[in-house]
Length: 416
Image 1 (cartoon, helix red, strand yellow):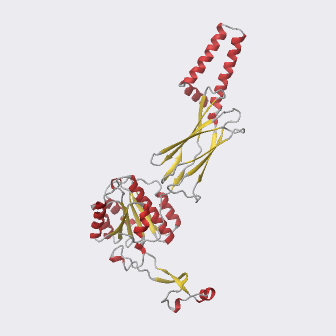
Image 2: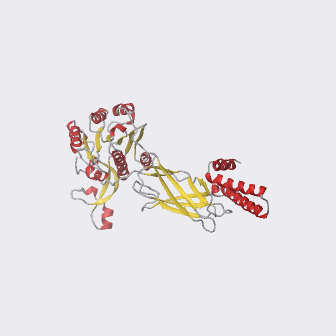
Image 3: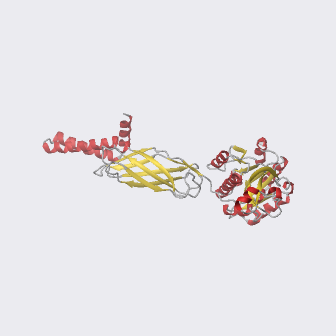
């Protein structure tokens, strides 16, 4: 009953509804005042046509159903990253008892930040009243995406009346941040001084008595290190590989303050940098945590498990630069989250006194501060270089990059 009322409420505001109503009323008056078989036959034909239009509006395309299937066009399956496309296959099932010459389908794809895309195409149902629509999205950036209700539109077999319907088929998916492969981070190199002279001893990782594998013999290895069984099997000298003591815990601190960024590309670079370092920690089995100084503060304690790392990556999917307030005050309020002796990796485009305040705070908490400056290609080089020199002058270390492709170079020791 509600569907009938909704149909007539919608029809009253439609011009086509009044055209049909006027035609039927004229035929009725023609029968009443003229009479005869001709007028009666004409009235019956118009009445049947109006009934067909009404049934089509109530039980036609308004009862359409559909399902949506998503697939990735890249080489990997199940993992969607920024820059990749998604292939959408829509299976449409219109009612079987009413023929539809064609169906115009309109899809709405919405991103978590309000961006939206509209995909529109038409299909001709098969003889079994089924249809398929396959299309491909443009390259998508990181974020959470959801499909709104699918709109469908069709005409009757005479092409006189248009009817609209729709269905909800779901189809939410996530796009992970763009990342780059980091083969080496000199901060974790043995006896590295990139994080400051005070960390040279802590970064010298002594070997334990736990055997981690077998490697080729190196000149200077003691006889006690030789793996005799592997040497006998392979015919070449092999030495035992022992595990090293664990590195200090690492905490990535992503600046998500709106006042820190001049354009959205800088924030995307900061998020992609954090995601790339998390993937590096997964490969190297480094105990790494992360926190975002946004609205609100969100922290993930350092861990080596894959599940914890996946939670960090998924947190970076739909984060925005919406934070506000003083950076140091926020960190001080969450000081229990930061353990003494940990690497404090601050990812931010700041180069002013706010940066020095954060780095000094990390040092007072007995952490090892390190800054990754996410600049912009349009930022003045003099300002960027001056901020880095000011940071080094106060005894802090870090690197600077203006694009994600520079990250493996600067972290590997290409520049400071």
